[in-house]
Amino acid sequence: MGRLRRDRLLPLLLLCSLLAADLYFHVWPEVRRRGGLLLLLTGRPLPPSSCPCTSHPSPVPHNVSRPAPSKLRELFLHPLHLGAPQPLPDTEDHLLSGSKAIRSYRRQVSRWNRKQKFYREELNMTYPDIQAAQLNLQANWLRFHQEISHSGLYPRDSLTVPKLLEDISNFNTISADYSPDEKALLGTCDCSQIVKPSGVHLKLVLRFQDFGKAMFKPMRQKREEETPEDVFYFVDSQRHNAEIAAFHLDRILDFRRVPPVAGRMINITQEILDVASNEDLQSVFFISPANNVCFFAKCLYMCKAEYAVCGNPHLLEGALVAFLPSLKLAPRVSVLNPWIRSYTFTGKEAWEVNPFYCNTLKQHYPYNNSNRLLNIIDMAIFDFLIGNMDRHHYEMFTKFEENGFLIHLDNARGFGKHSQDEISILAPLYQCCMIRKTTLQRLKLLALEDYRLSDVMRESLLQDLLAPILTEPHLLALDRRLQKILDTVKSCIEINGEKQVVIEDSFEEPV
Image 1 (spheres, rainbow, N blue to C red):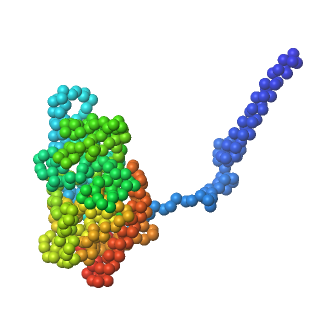
Image 2 (cartoon, rainbow, N blue to C red; image 1 turned 90 degrees about the vertical axis):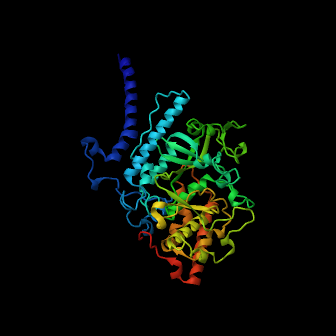
Image 3 (cartoon, rainbow, N blue to C red; image 1 turned 30 degrees about the horizontal axis):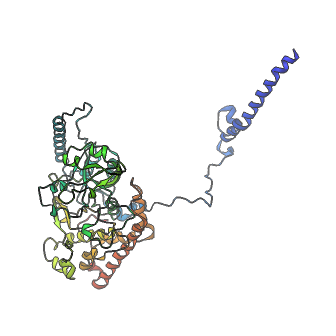
């Protein structure tokens, strides 16, 4: 009998030991953390005065660095970037009439649905799960179009642009086709008027599930590659990362004249080939010897496999540029840049040989309007910062007439040479010796340590899915070029006086 009790006692002692260990190592530390026995017995916490803990945050150890303040956020909170409130929709300051735009887009959706239905019927394709496209009045691309106003492509405080960038970075594509330029190159016009015989012109129009559109410009050059010195500007590669960086720089300068651009990895099989109904586009896809899917533009100059772009094996990175309203809905005029460069190997334009070219230009319409000339100078400053020598035309919305802003389209030939500053791009500035006052104020702001241009650009570009967008030498080149712009303005002021050089913003809202 005693032996039986002894056998029961041993397991009991073992269980008691385990319970004591659990209380000591698990329950008691938790009771102490929550406030001691009073909390355990009553369920009420200790009063604040008797709590053994402290409500003050523990000091950060000296060897742990605090996050640096956002220079980009501080820049956008600066008075120069706040400006006056934007006009309400449907006022004369906006590009589109809301009701007219919606009617036009509804017709576009109906036409697209009819074309897709006809295409499927023609090929005897049956997809019972395919739904007809619908116009979503809350779509961000539509809101973007409705926000375009006299002062820029989007307001300073736009909540739509970040959402639009997210949409074009993630939405599924429902169709892919050549751009209007590429279609023209198939024989309906003179190819030489649209593209130079360089084999670098390739872009596609992608339509997304919300019926928005973007121009896809694929990667053709790695970020760390520089344009060789013996390559002419008009045969230079078009860089997708230059389009992305140009949008961010334009926003930082507060010009707001570049359409929103986002980087994205595209599956060129699923998101281009499988949704393309254009037989010409379908016919230029092929498999490379490395088993990568490739495609090329089909026109007189470029119908060659060596001009193709290839996925890895299907994925290809590129820039997606948001579409502006159609020309039918919002007509634009394309104007020859008065500082256009010669597109021959030996020729020179008038401004290249005549240092007084601007004086002659100001005697003729439309450059007798100082606002147009100041916009040209803004554009030259922007192009100098990105190193773009290929600004042969500029576009304007006809609704805004003479006082409208210039749209900075096609920036893919920027950021080619970080080691060279092409000072001739600044010819409008140093020949006319004029600059808009707010432009100069913002440039001076970006030269300060607290708002350094390279730092805010670096921070802004980190928001893109394809970051890093620019290499460090390109970012540092921005600071160097900015200083050269300010030095040029300083020289103009020393010669002509500040009143003649720095022009008040008579056609902009006050800042």
